[in-house]
Image 1 (cartoon, rainbow, N blue to C red):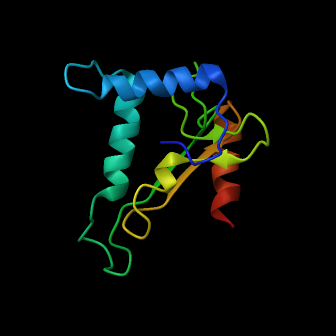
Image 2: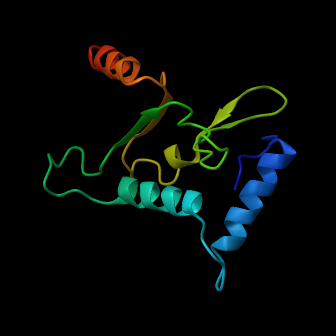
Amino acid sequence: TTPQDFNLHPSVAKILEKREMSAQPGGRIDFATAEMLALGSTLLNEDWSRDFSFPHRDVRLSGQDSRRGTFNQRHAAFIDARNAMEWVPLRSMASGEQGQFTVLNSPLSEMGVLAFEYGYSLG
C-alpha cells in the first residue's frame, strides 16, 4: 500500500493494481513482480553467517534506469505526481527487521558504471 496522501501517476497506479492482483490465488506473477518479491525476501532473510549486529542482508542495485526499470516494469522507487516526494517500498517493509535497500541510476556504458561504482565506494 502506498503511504497516505501519496499521489501515484494514474498509469503507475494501474501497474501496482496489476501487481497486487497477480499475487492473489490463481494470479500469474510477472517478471517484475517476481523480482520485487525476490529482493524483498532477500532483505528480510536473516544472515547468521555475518556479525550479529547486522543480521539481515543488504541489497544494492545500480545501473541505467534501475529505479524505474528500463521498460517501465521495475518501479523500485515511486515519485509523487504532485510534489515529487520519493517512496521506495522495499525500504519500509519491516522497520529494524530488514536489510538496507539502495537503488541508484548510473550511466549506461560499462566504464561509466565502473567509475560510478568506484566513486561510490570511496564515500
